[in-house]
Image (cartoon, rainbow, N blue to C red; front, top):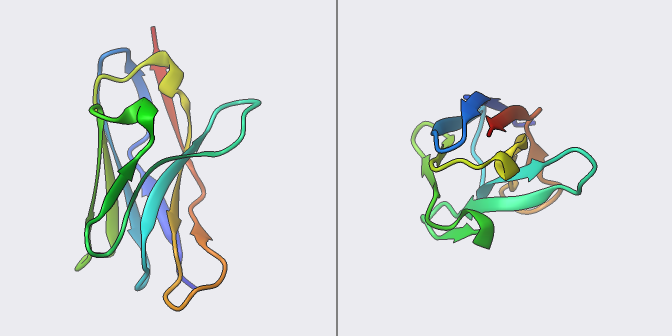
Length: 114
């Protein structure tokens, strides 16, 4: 069983930046960030394969950058030009090698004040 531990959330003013990190305790396949605002469904923010192929939701393109360090089993999300609508709990996600149910982190709160 692989554990995912997120860090880096917090309170920031609109226009500011935050760096989220997610450390995996073992070897995983594709990884990604999802977010869930109060009363809304959990949506994908960005994903990245082990080979570095990236996907971004339209709402974060040009502002967020996803990256990973495979040697450290760590995922990152650099968030810039933050907006109040980015406020949510951000979750780290990782796919199992060989398939099966994904791993999820416990979530980290990001709050952007106007």
